[in-house]
Length: 232
Figure 1 (cartoon, one colour):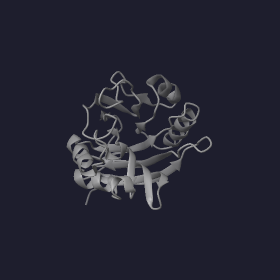
Figure 2: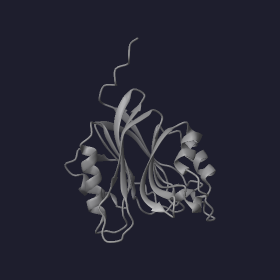
Figure 3: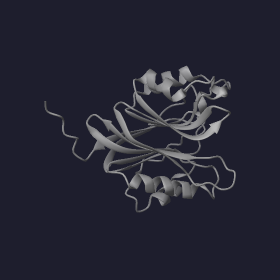
Figure 4: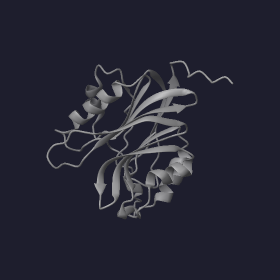
């Protein structure tokens, strides 16, 4: 599942982290990539939004900061999973001038005996900047073992994303249903791309109680063998 949470902002402008957490937990995903996550930021009450969502859904969690907000606050991406999360790396992405700092969060996730290389990111809105950022994340993900999943708000239409994935062994999930803005979706800028596994189902969920994006869910079918179970 990928979901740009917009700090848990409701349609009335208020930020409600508990409502965000209840919503994500209710979707019951196994692996979640969240973008626009606040940790210790004043606008969201100084709470750790990633940890709050993780507690509500019974997930393990890692947070990858992209930039600071205020004196102590951080803002970035989070990866949540119903299983182990290891080999974690937060990588700064290339930027032009004083544009907002962006980052990629990469890790290995173990879910139901299967290992998965995952990258979560939120790319720039600058048309000149975003292709280089996508290339950097994809290159880092390609260095990790199959199967691989790219998750994020890429701020790119499907044609541009597909062009950036050419030759990288990643297939883009069906893009016919838009995800933004949440109240009346007209553009598909939230994406999942998969390599080394099959996509059984792709679904854009209905309007959420928080955020200006809709969540995208992809159900995977496992093609590699499972990790062998330990024997006592």
